[in-house]
Image (cartoon, rainbow, N blue to C red; front, side, top):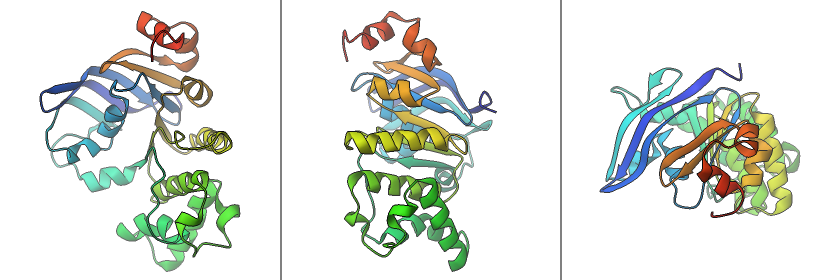
Length: 253
């Protein structure tokens, strides 16, 4: 299953106004694996990630050409329901962003929006999502407390529980550990590795060591171009592109 393509990116170009941000990018993201997108600041990592659930649509000057296929369907094709797409493709952002609601209501939010089950079913799915996010044992006796009462690492796992509560197929993580302390980062990385059994995970990271620890495949971006794509062990030990080698050896970044 791990080698089955879940997302196919095909000759993708993206402009913000006159700024050509992503340039002719093509690679396949396999199912039930962790794919890391890495590269120096400003290379287009987060922009590429946001094309997979059409978050860039919210920026008025965006122009996109090429295709992104999710399970063979072009998500930029006619008749695509973007709300349904974002249910299938969940996202966790760089900074924990819990809603000003209780811990329970944060996780239940998407379930209520999409009308996924009665009150009993919502409670069951909230507990399941918190368990999958390795958070249930820490919060089960305080579900009605504000989400802001949690630590930063707990808040990020809560946001992950919120994303997976609606049962997506794909989870996008945009530098999810950049605001966390080392202990919280380790817990989050362990969780990411566990979750690939159930989800296809794409993570943007500027941290090369993190990419090496958690990912099965790596894409390396440089100035909006795909410089390298392959299995993580191959990219780190035998990079094919000198730009990748220079980045990995610290010559820039």
